[in-house]
Length: 103
Image (tube, rainbow, N blue to C red; front, side):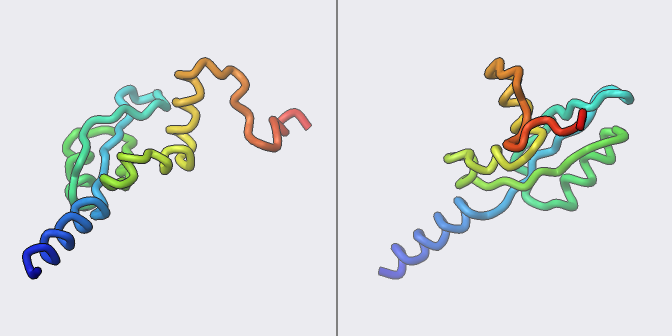
């Protein structure tokens, strides 16, 4: 019984423990983030690796195994959402309220 409880706790920790993905901008004038490394366990390690890459812009995006399995978290990240729309070929990438920049 103790073994089952310990195994269950380890599985829950593995599935829900947050990890970080490192995204950097490769060009100095670029705006597109590129995935460089995944499954970094500590945010300070992610920031350190970004600084070692000597890039001017980086993001350490938090994720987990659970989010990776169901990938529902990506629809809330604007840069990922826009990239997914571009891959689908959806040219009309306005938000729910439409483009209000011309008004």
